[in-house]
Length: 322
Image (cartoon, rainbow, N blue to C red; front, side, top):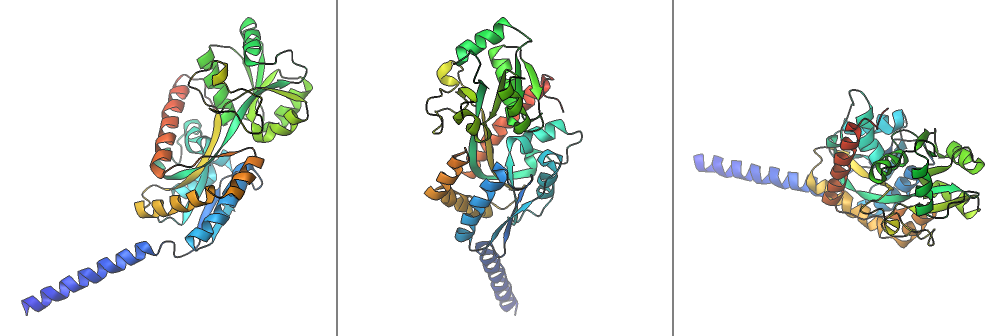
């Protein structure tokens, strides 16, 4: 009798294990949601929709993109941080939403550690630019002017805490220069003032500045990527012009709530990787001014943690403020 009971228990355990394994293998069993913490139409939104549509083919379930804007991306990000860690609610994030926002918000509702990294989607290069009428045609000439006029040369960006703003602060520290940093509410107003000569320079995403550069209204002095940007092949990188070990880009990627099972993360990363390998998606992202970056979940996690360390050091200096 005891032996029979033991056999029954073993059989039940085996069934439970099999059911658990089947459940894990069945992921996803329902639609997956990607929260974009900004309004529709922006670069991050378009990127998430492009990739989500392709990922749905690999996953065998719809991937639905939902915009949940507010508080500079913190509202939508917080909602995902507090979601069940089951792989069905993801967030499209940047260093701004994942790292900078928690540094600027009093009693932040989430930290980078509140999330599990899935994989990087793309990077949008940043560009240092001046009006077409500026006498400066390269970084050396421009920096000589800045150094000769400490605390006088203006440089604009699209808003406090954005990657554009962070790049200026990091460059200011690395190059030992003293700009008058002018924040705007978005790239649009800043570009208008730059073209009009109200500010002398700006750091911006190539995606929003390309039309003005191509139209001859602005001059690009340097791009922030490690290699030259396909859309601006004649513009040298910062590194080419002597700024060693420095990259200025806006990275974006997918995140799940902390505690999401490793097998689910692998499935999502695989689907994301297949989407990024599609030449049609690469072409469309290039048209948006973005470049594909494919990573493993571990590589993306390490990248984000490194960014967090650098930005916490920057915040500790007191220059990064709300």
